[in-house]
Length: 205
Image 1 (tube, one colour):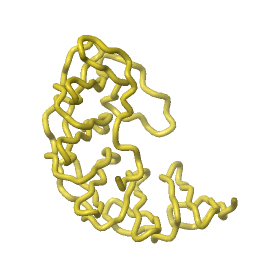
Image 2 (cartoon, rainbow, N blue to C red):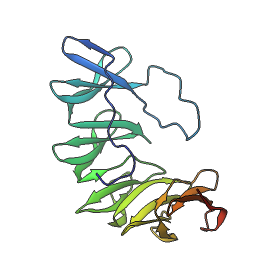
Image 3 (cartoon, rainbow, N blue to C red):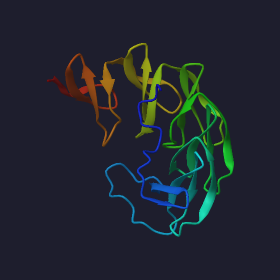
């Protein structure tokens, strides 16, 4: 898999009852980076595996989305990434298919866009499934503070939501922007850049 982030839920077993295995809770809303996890309430969904397929139950143990998927993810911005067969798509919180499974790989939504892979190239779709940024990258990560990490060849840079290159691919590794700064690696040294690509902390070991 090419996407940088982990795309599948780690299925830590919590209980087994009558062949139904429940896993860790799956939030319906995504917490902001650095914020404490939201308190558990009745709106939480929990991933469950039954007869080799994954679905969701609520806090009472009621099945709210029937187990029929090969992979599931946390809900992010109202949608969850699911895998059916060898294709990825998205469902809404009622379990209805919101974006048909059609992608070789896919990431969670962030800031209204999600990275998807088609024919070994990555682009970004909006929440209607429309291609917002054409597949052209060798790897990609989610948007953060209006910019997303993308790889062309073996170097990482950043694009904006229009798909325009803001910081040209030149780094061996990158991190998401947070509070206006992002960690980047050149060779074996890490530094910090601002959103113009200027170093505010020069690379050091």
